[in-house]
Image 1: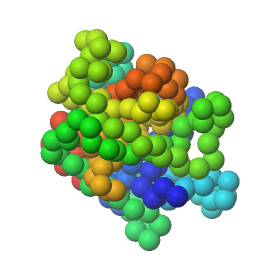
Image 2: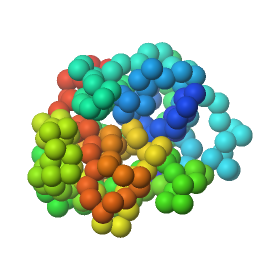
Image 3: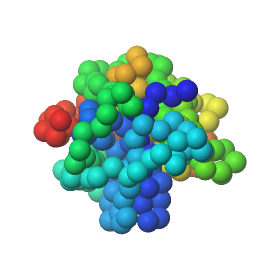
Length: 210
């Protein structure tokens, strides 16, 4: 079972994921919140079927987009949600932003609340093992839309993240956050890498709101 640091987000028209940095701070993709209405945030769940009845949306104090966010190119695709009240530490866990270099070939884990390969919404947090690709792999796939200064290239030959996983965490060493799910070129998998917002490029933005 995935640890409960992966957050479930819903809006009027979409589902996204997020990750907890501490009792009052959630990191997610900016495109999940861009012009969103009726935003609801849930934390501490790993199984919606068993835990949904006990869940109430968390009260949001503020939302902060990374400077320069572009909703068309998904550049600087990062946002922070601050909660009005601290979460109970016994019901959730937190990740640690990692600001160091992550070598090509590094094994990582991505998690989220996205749809399954059959297109059905998942009832549980799902995780997938991926590896870090070199930048050329994403430049070949996405061209100039991929920016290695602020984005990471990662993927799996078997499957990939899917609709609803946007904003979810990319982790190494169990609790070190290196990326946030941003976008892919196809639905769930085309056996090519996908793009994550690179945590190490946003240290000042993240630490400003911790």
